[in-house]
Amino acid sequence: MAVIRQQRQTKIGPIGINRTFTGGDSLGDAIIDVSNQIGRRYREIAIGEAKERGAKAAAEADLPSITTLDEGTNLPIALKATEGMGRFSAEAFNNVVLKRFENALSDDITAKKMNLCKDFLRVQMLQQSLNKYFKNT
Image 1 (cartoon, rainbow, N blue to C red):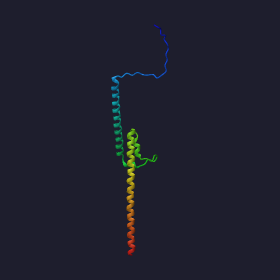
Image 2 (image 1 turned 45 degrees about the vertical axis):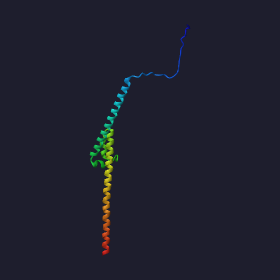
Image 3 (image 1 turned 90 degrees about the vertical axis):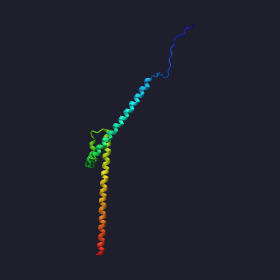
Image 4 (image 1 turned 60 degrees about the horizontal axis):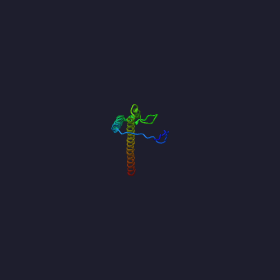
């Protein structure tokens, strides 16, 4: 029998990793997936509750604090109440306050427009009555 000399062999190439399948891995992955889903759901619920608290606080704010503007920022004074609120509560609070501010301004403009229309009708009626008076005299 011939003697085989030991030779040094080097090979450059990708390194392969052998993985063995164990049944516990799929069970662990399933548990992780379920816990992530539960965590996402609780986060969505917490965000919804925070937005609801912010909107409720804005709905309870008095109208003068919403319609009065801060001289430094030219924003409603009520927006200062967001200090101490979380990000989602403050965002909902700001949205509701700004919407109430827009509605209050719209109501004021509509009321002023109606008053001006009444005055215009009175002036027109006054002119008509004066014209009748001048025709009759």
